[in-house]
Image (cartoon, rainbow, N blue to C red):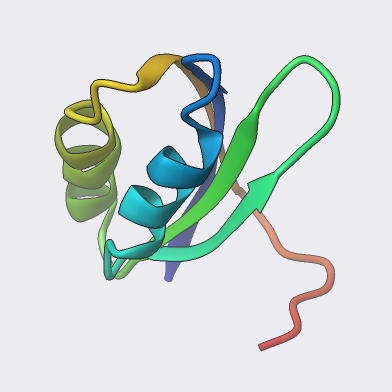
Length: 82
């Protein structure tokens, strides 16, 4: 299983709407509103890197309320709670 953390800047006032769109995606396992530089963080999970790339670049990339993203690929999990 491969995972990525997608950090997002979202249009002002659109965080709840954007979070719901992300949460409706099968590959998005968690969505958090956060304080600090970013507005939302999504944890995306897939069996294959290719599918993960599609989700990040096509599905998440197509959400118009997302202004900019930074994607962090997870190499290794030191603690994971299901």
